[in-house]
Length: 127
Image (cartoon, rainbow, N blue to C red; front, side):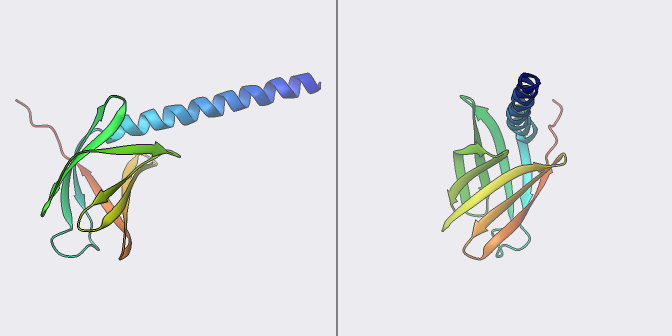
């Protein structure tokens, strides 16, 4: 009977690890593309951005444009089902992106505190 429990526990652990890997891959596939980002609580001039999120060499890289900011191919790392990076935008800001029940969300941790980011996917124009 103990052997059966050990085998069952091992199977459960295997399934949970597979789900975690799929979650990370799923987040990467969901965030790829162009996004309009608004940070309502940020100071004027730092509220609107366009992100171009792509995968390069199995790593998520993001281009950021808005205001005086123009960042190219900033690498984001995946940990615990979230993507994060430290960006310099006049000060270092930690940006975190995650999937919450099918909705992409984010936050910027700044000297002003944690500021929520609103994501809106930009549609591809038909050629």
